[in-house]
Length: 360
Ligand SMILES: *Cc1c(COP(=O)(O)O)cnc(C)c1O
Image 1 (spheres, rainbow, N blue to C red):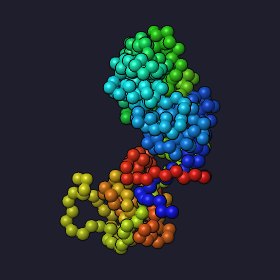
Image 2 (cartoon, rainbow, N blue to C red; image 1 turned 60 degrees about the horizontal axis):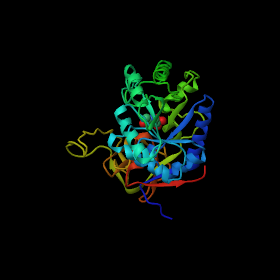
Image 3 (cartoon, protein in one colour; image 1 turned 90 degrees about the vertical axis):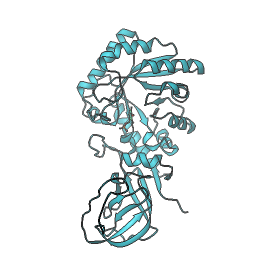
Image 4 (tube, rainbow, N blue to C red; image 1 turned 180 degrees about the vertical axis):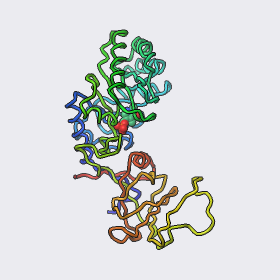
């Protein structure tokens, strides 16, 4: 049967294997995993893999993705990672059971929405321990926690931090200890137990595995390490996981022998850049039906190590296939391993067909 291209293949059982491995490793350090689905746009095949692996909490940055999580049959708690806007509070409390927040004004909107809908909603207060993305600055944490704790229809259940995303700050004993100190101050001020201490994302795994994670950090929100099997600090393979979990497939629409340097005077390319070329002489080139609308061309690796990605425009991916393992012909499928950025584009592009592949 013809499966259309461009195509994104999700290897369900392989991702389930990764999720099981990471849940086990985290459990050894008394840490619970919230599995993050955003890089695969909360695709049902991913949900199947995570449920197979026994994931107990699903997290996503988008409310519409959490709606999809619910429609896929997941019945456990759903965590909203990106703070909702005050105006989307009604949708947030409908599709998420808990959300990460850094503003008591937004939490007030959540409280009103929860009352109107007759539902319960939990809140984790984000604390900025240095990465300069979301989070209450530590010197304002007690005041904000007090304000959140006074709202009648939400429950403040803990604190959280996010690192290595915007500022690239590494998770450390110092910043995790800071988070725990803020938690203790907020407990004392509010009288609440604040049991959840959500230390971060995949970038926190190395600190955990080294045995240096301060006791009390009891939740990590893991996306890339589960889905791509990588340590996000250096992109090396993470122990106990596999990396052949998702594949992008394109189809060849032209094969020709051409020089490797363009002829004629050169100006800007389609994206306003001045491209530079390496002269490798006359080479066999192939064009695939993949472009910047489907992937990030700089962030994909051909599954055949003999193939070189030369560049791309919106819709055309240019390959040097001179040294391919077997001769590349018109109509052939070419596979690529995507990195995180390419996967994010592929999974959210309306032009890419996402399919589940079973078996290991
Ligand atoms: C995306 C995201 C995560 C997951 O990050 P990974 O690097 O994929 O593990 C965790 N927390 C928040 C707040 C996020 O936005």
